[in-house]
Image (cartoon, rainbow, N blue to C red; front, side, top):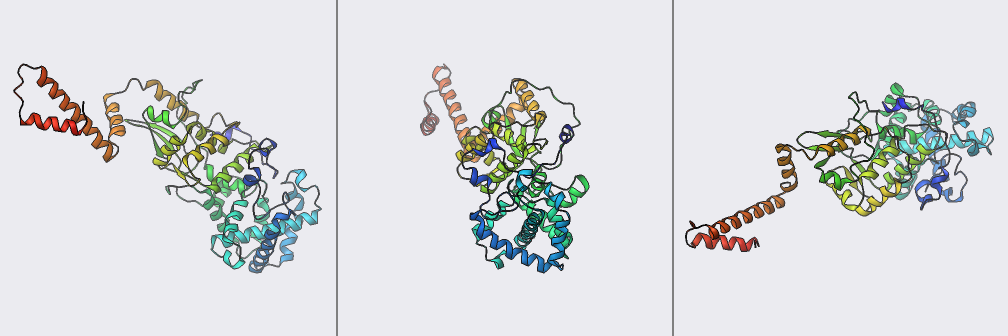
Length: 434
């Protein structure tokens, strides 16, 4: 169990690590576009319009809560020391306890009301432009734009709509996982957390937990590790007779290799669009934050995909297998994205180690295939569509006709040229057989 290999520590809410801050388009990928949540971007001029929206959302939240705003504010004030401790010291050093409580109260109410209205299709009443709604949705999952989950819990507990709010938060996170396939049974993440883990630090950590899924158990004997990998990308996997197939679930840890008459690499289906691009980048940054000891689950997934994708053709193969849904642009753009995001990373060496070892073992034994394996591979390559079937039959027919003609030419028993021979000649010309 991977989680047992690390002493998991809770991260502080802090800025993106310095090693990532000089990357191209840093502001576009890591900084909020519409709404600043928390102290790190508070007061910046570009978020003035967002402050107006937050005030309207907060007023609506208090009105529907059945509780006086002063009482809800007081519960934030009473816990301000613990809430301050969720942040890196530099993020809150300039705030008095009262100023920080005011900020967390306003942002917490606005966040919960936005999520509730988003899930229930009620945001139109706030007159927030549609394109800004999409950007604000993404803003809530940026590493620098987080509130302690404790703020949300304290406020939800004071509302008469506590259950509806908790359900809305769970649904909001689940929607933003942005996975495809629909084979995974949906579960209530908050109920899962109550049973299996402590309260998350913030919404981004809750999203990470949902995306990764539960730790994988593998009771089977571990295969030996090889020093040099025998594969580099999808093209080489296909050349080695390995087919791609969607995993039974959509969690990032659900990567496996199965081998029978046909070998399959099973990968979780994922939708890659602008939103998922930013989410993966921010989860990568989150796992790299100082003092956050973790199993690097998302980083390991990114590195695994980076090892599979070398060029646009590899992306095309993933799309054809129903493993990747490309809404980012061209296949070349997706290849460049994974090649860029996957550099200079330190994945967990144990993540997917059994999968890699099984693939390498497959390569070491591939030169001793059985007859059934050859027949299956022949069918996958040459009989996988009506066009390849017709082309294959045409080639076989052409080879057969050429063989007959050769026999008739050299055999002393061959009869004289007949009408059948004329048909054969005509078919040869149509198939362009020399």
